[in-house]
Length: 426
Ligand code: GUN
Ligand code: FE
Image 1 (cartoon, rainbow, N blue to C red):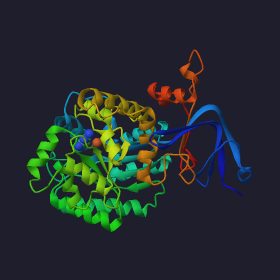
Image 2: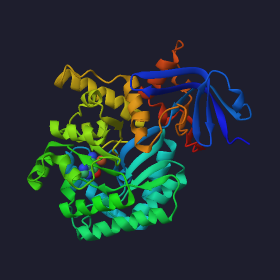
Image 3: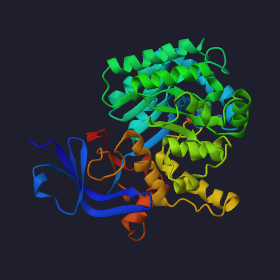
């Protein structure tokens, strides 16, 4: 007995950044959670599988949010009139302190997970807080959601207020080990731990070294922030006089790629050597355009990164970004790239819709392995969109309907089904 199903609809995906494939009234096969490609007619060998008929609808890969903060959903859309460092001190850190209380954490994280479930996202890389037990609650909830995620217990042992500063590097490292061990013993299928130094400002060199050891011992990926905002970059220079550049602090500790997955949010002010190191080490850049506007951080030179062959995905970065909508992230990435082209560098062509769609699917999906496409051998992540609600006066091509669905935020009202690794979530 074959285990799987076939989905029929207008199947849209990007095998490459400038290759948007649209297959109208086509069939995609899910077998044991794996996509077997897209076909015009059902191949005989899959004749026994049931067909889910989404004729007329848009079928896209699940979106991948490469960077967001679960505890910050509680104040999304508020406290926006600050730059990064002031925003952290006045808005973010006070909220994150509340997660010392596990009952609060559970109720707040239930809201986060419910929203992620309803969204177009199938995979997400999450920050928790410094609190191990609360972050485990988040991991449990994510596991039960059917979504696929990396969840990080955050490390902070300096430059943080009392109540959000771990007492020592060794304590922070020991709690990280506890978090990782617990994740292993809970035998999650869809949820994995990720090493999460908040950023250089909040982690001592000793802590970074400890985290590098834990990373290596358990073979874990890493997430952090890098070269986001001018005030932050300046403070890092003052704190880390020995480092060649900001990202060098992570690299010296073994937390910056080199065969291990690492994702760094922002990379707006990365100097040429840092960009080279990102490329050489195979570090992912999580581009979070809305966050970069809200915190007046700036615009990352994504066109340049793509030209160089740097791995890029998109992130929502809640609560510096307003919401979990990756549709927003896709269109915001295009919009800010146009401003960059107009105001900063007329040789940096704006991102096109297919390119941004690619970043949000296969681009970020690569952080998880084979995800974000309907090519043979990829994990079967799919979102079905019914765009009839958008009511056009004349018929649009499927290509145009897809783009319009993103700009018109169809992820708020038009998702009718969602699958992550072959499992139905909506
Ligand atoms: N840098 C360090 N912490 C944070 C955070 O919570 N959000 C963003 N956007 N940048 C950070
Ligand atoms: Fe962030």
